[in-house]
Image (cartoon, rainbow, N blue to C red; front, top):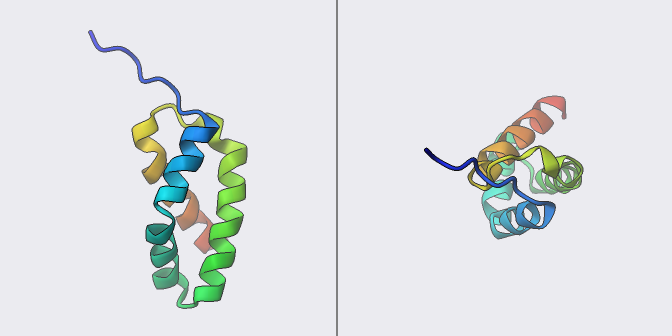
Length: 77
């Protein structure tokens, strides 16, 4: 029997996002074609992610969760 994953806490989420900042920015630059727009989208996504950090149940899911948030932000942009 496996133990359920301990939910990620906002500091955990923030640490992972900061560690992967460059990856996320590169992803957005490729999506929108502009460094300035990518930086704006990423900043907004960071703020939104902190509001929703408590929805991440598995610390290993933080990066895929944030990429989904970024993808949705690009679509909305």
